[in-house]
Image 1 (cartoon, helix red, strand yellow):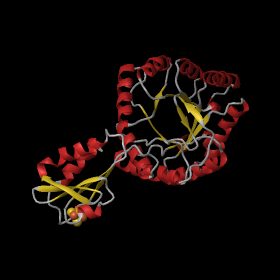
Image 2: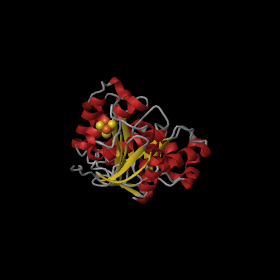
Image 3: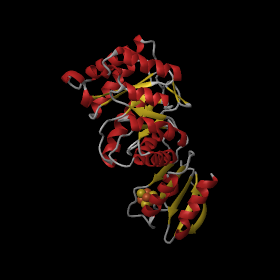
Image 4: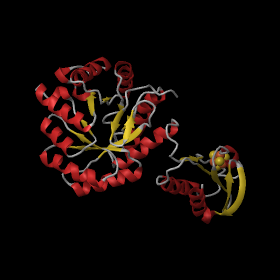
Length: 344
Ligand code: SF4
């Protein structure tokens, strides 16, 4: 897979764009001014694998909390600001690593210049975010119109010699989202933040996001992703990791292979598969683990797995790369797999 080259930008200690990692990001659901809850949620997101986190900044109290939040977390912090340049200045002053702001929404050019100068002084980028649901002047949500709006914002920053830009062009319609990002990749040299906006709840939203984001990543488009779900943001991270792993864009995420089961199943493998899946969420290495229903077909069907288990009556066989290496009792399967995953 050939990644499209973009201008690299620095986001905290990360470089985004070009051939660099496609970063996983999410947004907190807490009130930002509630520092304790926000930091707690960010720590949970970090543990789940989130690499960049965004918080909503609605007022001065939110903005004033950013420095303390930043001190207590370990991943780049992005301040999401809509119209108020003073909040942007305070966020930059508090030490955030990136701001999300559409300069065209600030009517006075001198105020935009103040924000741009502050970003330049601190070396932090600006993400311009255009969403299909909030285009100005009653514009129809089409790919061309979204690009036109984004261009307006980009040109303001470029006219001030500011090029540390990232762009998002999210649509709730997956096909429009794909079309718009394809056009954006041809139009702009900047890193793209991919996402389907208002994608829905965990199950349907994750599928919709995986399709939209996955199709674009497969074409080499996209430098950071957010799976937006109406759920705990940790689920967003899990979904994002699945997307990147299946596109071979990350080699630090485990892969669980499990058969759909059939009339040949001989043990309670669905429960084991679910428990192992939960365990693997805390593992940061590339390992293929297979949980198969029967020992007649299982090892052969999952011969590409690094380690695996296939059930028999009250017992199971452990296999490595399709070869059976030992036989254990069914009750020992979970612990044995965990031990092998840890040792791998
Ligand atoms: Fe059926 Fe065995 Fe294949 Fe699972 S591994 S689907 S139980 S044949």
